[in-house]
Length: 456
Ligand SMILES: *Cc1c(COP(=O)(O)O)cnc(C)c1O
Image (tube, rainbow, N blue to C red):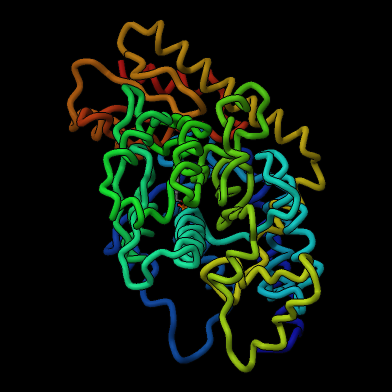
């Protein structure tokens, strides 16, 4: 198994050849999903005690398993938050795999950590975080929110929070399910604010919530969480106003920008993020709207040394990694989140940024925003559709008057089945609606218009 011989060489050519073929598909087929019984029938039991011809196993993947996965990068995959990695990022992901770098410590991966930090600094600069901020890349927004809140709780306790008490998180009304889940893991309570008619939370709503707390509950507040781009409708909270409440409470300010903070690089919407520079922690997922492959969330801290106090693991065999007196550059990624071993998963994003330059990111971001605005305009003028709200970012929410939940579901299934598009319904204030999330520069207004026309 651990020898590179003639058979490995043939396999290498086949695997790299397939990867190349896949990257060349422009666009990839949408593909789809299937049932367990279908896969059992067509793939069968794939692992046995004796060897199989690797080319046969590869073919099983390329012909049966891969087509049973929806292509996230298809230009008409508009469900959830899709992704659209650049060719450079995807290709470099192959290099990261071939190198199998242990990305947890400076000692073992100084070069990789240096490059990841370059990419993190670009994001920190866009957000306006001060010199000395820093962080690491984790698997996704859920892991990022949890790790940030662990750091928040550490500081809350350091500053006098009851070590046995149950902490409290004040979250904006549009906050993501993963914030609730992180609080659940931390055994913290969460209270959420009300929102305006678009699902946005402003400073007044957060202040009202804080003012409504009994003094004993005020003392429990370990973090205030704002959302910079709600996942369902893409609305950006009033970050500056919410930061004021966090400051008045003397508590940690976390901004969940997993989806939306990518648009920090787009001049046309940068003003929506005013106040993000006051965050104690911030997340953004390059695997969503920053053209990186899975799995990748940038987690940034104003003061990464607090995160280190909260997260660093201590063990005899790890002590060699902890050298407190060597300065900032020696911060180990493993100490900044809930993880230890880690893939250097920021490298594909870094490589693509270095290759294309950051201006190309701003342009690509503006392109997707432009398509979202054009689609909203189209819906506004449509005879058979209504725009549920003006988009802040790139989520367009659409109503088809006369349709109920089952009509949306049937239409959505049919469009996936015929391979034309993947658009699942969502709900807004209890009503079933169609939600189009546009993060792919290959998505054109005309193509989306075709999808919308099929709802007539
Ligand atoms: C997607 C999302 C998350 C969760 O991110 P994952 O990478 O899926 O774990 C958290 N918050 C927001 C606002 C999101 O859009």
